[in-house]
Image 1 (spheres, rainbow, N blue to C red):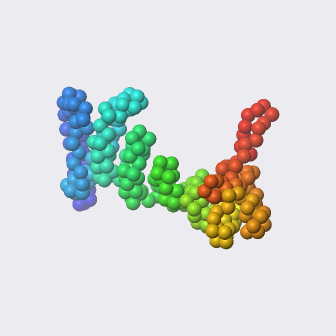
Image 2: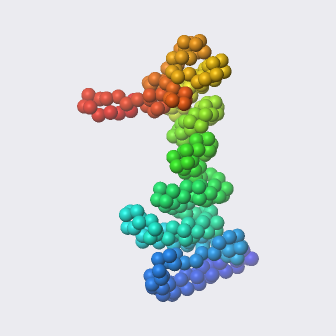
Image 3: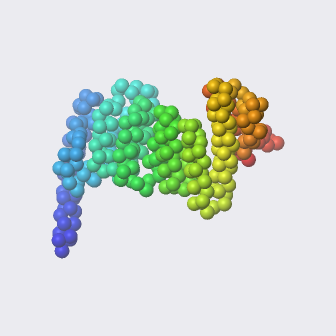
Length: 297
């Protein structure tokens, strides 16, 4: 009985709010259009007090602020496409989105929009990552969040260790071979090849589909080969007090019997920093068909 009364009360308040919004929206829109650019998003209260004051309405207000931000952004898309970023109210836009996410971290549109608008356009990657990490505390099942975090850390910030950990989380949540391979790759890029090997072995055990297992096993073989070369490099450095200049120095000095084969068909070599690289870049080789078009093997 009490639950029914509560539901009726919430329904009544929502209907009342919708009527008030419909009544005053034309006036509000006209007023906003007459304001200078930097005020058009209006003031958005910040912090936990705002969240507490709204109570159950915080979910609705959070979604509304996200919608408001997207509408504002869409209205300025011409300026953005012409890279006239100074004419766009990015600071207030971020604050509005931040409040939106604080009030309703379950709203998928908000973090999608933050990822799209603030990383590529103006490079506020750390701020976006902060929002994504907050959302992930609530949307713990959503593999897209650690995927975005992994991409941001790898592509924009070049922090391969963090990228690998988030891609690992994305692969665990989704079971996707793409995220598993990305995690393994960035463990390698971050100098943690053995972690990449351990991650792949765990995913192979958990995976039932044979075709996906084959993908993982191929990447595993490549990382095991790299790990073998890396250990030989460390032994070489320990004996000679310097890094080898060429990968064949490892064979000549007896630290490795031969250079392992790259499962992807490339050739391993050392870059200027003695980092193990391969001509395949750990991707499938392309083969040229008779008509001249390339396709993956």
